[in-house]
Image (cartoon, rainbow, N blue to C red; front, top):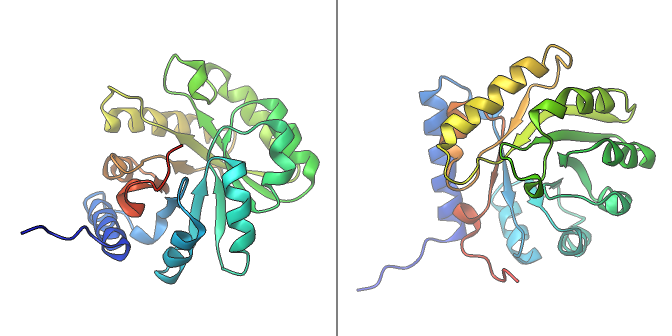
Length: 227
């Protein structure tokens, strides 16, 4: 006898329960953790259903997919987080709907964001690998980029974003991010947010102090179209 696949509501409830459990183990208040549901490749109808289930934060990484969904759902009380690598010439269009850019990785992108002239929350993406193609700034270049963001009048530096490298223990990777964050706080004392942890490793991220989780498949289920 086959078992029915969990519904969207059931998957969301299960993830919320796991987050609450991890927060309890870490001695943290679960209300201090924001879950961003990553909805790339999924239709606006799924985001509307998520909204009905109490989700307020959604993440997208491709402007061409995000823009029409954001326009269709403009009447909903949603915060859109842009989490993918962003070309400077797309910044103005992305900021029509997104209030949060989680992939700041170079001074020219900061300049493009500031030029729009609207308040934006920014996370600097830290590259934990030796592969520049994965996006993000190296630890060696971080301080200079922090200074650039802090000098941009309309851009608020929230903290760091990172992805655990394949093949590395995620908790160890997130510990690295936390230690870099602690050093960064000396020059940016209010930039304490840590966006780290996805479907396969959000528990480890919570244990290492993540304030923002970017969770897709564990909540949304299999992508409708990965093309």
